[in-house]
Image (cartoon, rainbow, N blue to C red; front, side, top):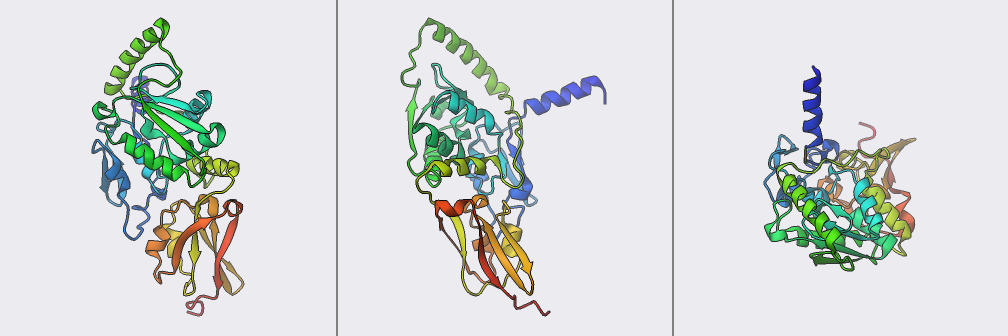
Length: 314
């Protein structure tokens, strides 16, 4: 491959607006009972296709709004979150979308704010203020963004119950627009017009803790600062056969099964549980239930069931 081909390939990768897809964390790929089509339902541009037990994202139709990433129960769709977290920190809990005029820290679309980002920022700064432009006429996220944000905030309160989010239309409060800011706004308007044709560059990749996506690390950080949490966890009732189905369908490897002597033990790593319900829906004897974990349990690995399975002597 020549230099020109390498440059072209690098350019195409840099301008790809699509989020990263990890098929091993996709409930469709995991063959969870009931499957999952939340990303398909959330996408305002029809860029998501569900084909061959996996998710396909159309790079032409995708605008990079991020609405699919927040609703994915297995965190299979994600943008690197470090740069957005830094923007929230620099803005001290204030952030605007690329269509909101004025100054302040900016993200392409507020649809990229996940429950983990909101919970972690709320645990640092208290009230969050998010400024949006005219979502109804926006070519990036569309009219569904405000409702989506409300759902993300409600989910974030599982990890930081005291979270308060205010969404305003227009400029961030307390940010007057002088002549310098007006000039910047005009430049920003030109830049955003170009972004509609050529979406923003993807955020730089950040190193990940093995087995725990960045989104869950943000939720964990928020939970550590909270007085109490409503983190999801699994309960197993009598009748468990200790088959491997729940561990096979779990998208984040929160469940694992270990043999200890003549017994098998099913463990749950609580901080890795998203409450997706794949194990509950797929459990053959239907003995798994979702409930809430205490703050003390979040960093623990809990034994859920222990016993000698009926198929042990087979």
